Image 1 (cartoon, one colour):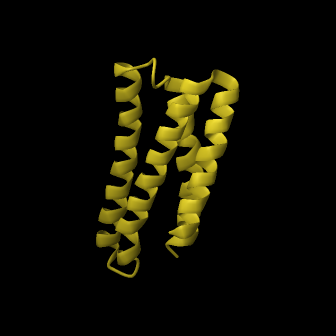
Image 2: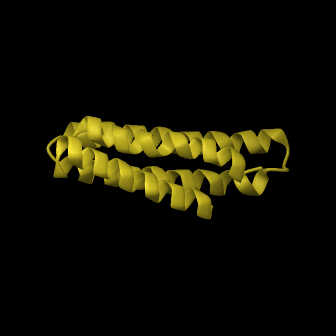
Length: 114
């Protein structure tokens, strides 16, 4: 979990910096908020799956599905924040922050839950 946390925080910082250079301060804030959300969701998803690695497949699959549901809630959070307050949460920057952190962490997850 430490690897996931460190990688997520580094990715969040990098993407916030890129968003700042491309779109400005408000975009950096949005990318940082949703990057941090992606890290939290990923840690929760790993926490759900890790204890049932050796359990029967149905139980593992149920926990994995719950983690995917959390990730979907994050995507819905982007739509909600960008729809309600696009001045503070520019859609492209928020999505870049969330997906730019979450997708690489999904690859790290495979190594973490082995």
